[in-house]
Each structure stands twice: as C-alpha cells, then as structure tokens.
Image (cartoon, rainbow, N blue to C red; front, side, top):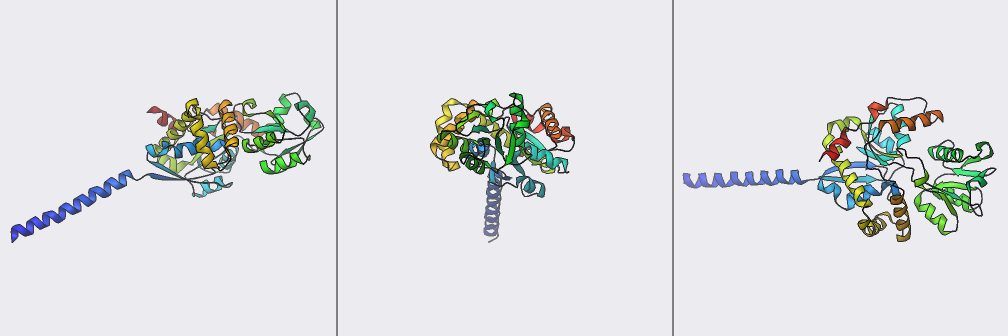
Length: 324
C-alpha cells in the first residue's frame, strides 16, 4: 500500500512539474505586446512599420505591435497610453520643450513625404508670385517647408500669401476649386491630383534631408526595456531593407494595398516615389541634423528656445539594434 501511495505521489508531482514546464515554455514563447500610436496605414511614411508587422520582422524578435491611428499620439505617449509613437519630429521637440521625458531613438523618414502641386494652368514655381498657397496652418512645418523651398528657388515671399486650408484632403479640394494656386500634399492626394491633370513640381527627393518623422519612446520605459527597444528598431530596419530590395516591390505593393485600403495604382505610384526619393532612413540618428532642424524651427518661432537635444537623442538603442 505504501509503495502504491509513493508511486501515486510521484505521478502527481510529475504532472505538476510537466504543467509548470509547459507554462514556462508558453510564457517564453508569448510575444511582447507594444502599444503604439500615430500609425496611418494610408501614409507612405508608416509603411516600413506595416511591413515589419506583416512580414514577420517583429515576430522574429518576439514582438507584437498593437498600433492605432491617432492625431493625438504625442499626448497618448506622454500620458502613458503608448510605449512608443511614430510621429513628426517637431511635435516631439515641442513636447520635450514643455517637459515631456522622451527619447528619440530612430529616424523613420529623413525627408518630408510631401509633394508640391500646382493648379491648372500653372507649370512653374516662379508663377506663384502674386498667388495664394494653401497650407495646414500658419505657421506649421508644412508652411515653413514651402516657404524655405520657394525662398531658395529665388521667389519673393512678400509677393506670396499663405492660407490655412486644413489637411491634404481639404488642401486638394481648395486647389481644384481654384481657391489656391499651389499646396503640399501627401502621396495619396498628390497621386489623385496628378490623375486630374495637375502638375507635381516638387517631390520628397527635392526637399533637403532632415529628420522629419521619428520613432519616440517614453524615456523611463525605454531605459527599463532597452532590449525591446533595440529589437523593435532592428525589425524596422530589416523591413526597410526589404522594401528597398527591388525583388520585393510587387510583394510590397500587394501587401500595402491590402493593409492600407488604397487602390493598387495609388500604392504602386506612392511606393515607387518613396523608394526612388530614398524617403526611408537606415542610418543612425545624427545629433547635428536635429540641431539644424531645431535652429530652423526656433528662427521661425515654432519653438521658443534651444533645448538639451543631447538628452533627447539617444543612439544606444540603434547601436544595439545593428550590433547583431
């Protein structure tokens, strides 16, 4: 009888041991869920992230991205709703200026993903003197981008009026209605404008290289989860390299058409333009590039003063990501 009890006890303990091993294995295999904001599937600037998720680059490193599209991504990051965001560099600098404890770990787009479009029958930049240009807001980064581009092209800004007309959809409508002579549009709306016969006079390749779209993390979270940050950045870089491989273009087009909800023609044109313009970044964040951008924004009064960019830009995560 005692022998039977010992055998039974051993059997039960074995079951608990096996169950514990299975639970440990399951936990080890469970992906790390990252909450992220600001990711627009229709925006070409977010496409490396979509590819990283869809093609398994995140999964290879045990990451699952749970992202939502929101124009209040920075507020969500500061409030702790997100671990990271994909957003504009200016918004991150402005938040840091107001005391947000952030770290900018990666430059996703090193050029503005914008297209300067003229209304009919205009065909040249110099025809814009005496005209009105539609921008998102006055002032805004889109507004300043057009100003600097026109000024460097020799136009007299005193002869040009800038009007706040809203987002790309509203700016295109204003252009088609003849209320403005030119505007900046995202790739999706630039393609639509071109389809109606409007002329695209400047593409992302024409803009000065600058850290335009970044990946930002809450700094305390990033410091406590540096390996996850590095894995995330590695997946983004691998996805970007995959996109730049010409052999993957058709696969990327099909994938992004499905994920974005855009039609195939729009995705084909937008993706080719983004790749030809070298829109997506692969290099380490450079402090000097951010200082140049900050100096420009301060000179145009979008930022009130220079800040401690050295504490905001942290390249250690990039170094960890590419080390392997």
